Amino acid sequence: MRRGVSLTVHGRVQGVGFRWMTKMVADQLNIVGLATNNDDGSVYIEASGEENNLQEFIAAVKASPTPSGHVERVEENEISAESALGKFRVS
Image (tube, rainbow, N blue to C red; front, top):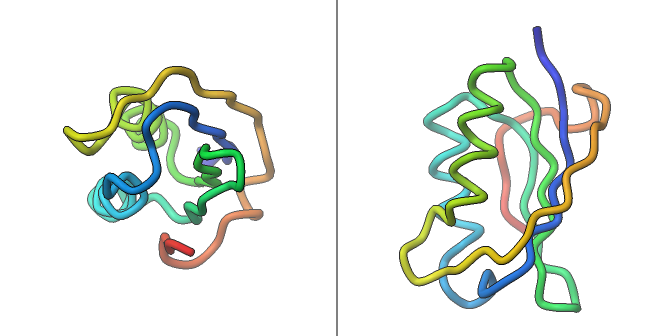
């Protein structure tokens, strides 16, 4: 079953390759969606995929997919699985 989430990731997540490494993880797990920087220094992510893959993706984001990043907290909300369609993109 597919489901979708939005994540707002706080910490040292801008300027450290966080969005691009997140895309690599998403591509490996067949997750679709997007990652973009917010003006407050956080990163906003929309992601959709099969439940097991999505859980693995969320765990990777919470652990920081880049070694130079540091995640302090993640706000997670359910969204429609159809909200995030197409290949995972970085903007």
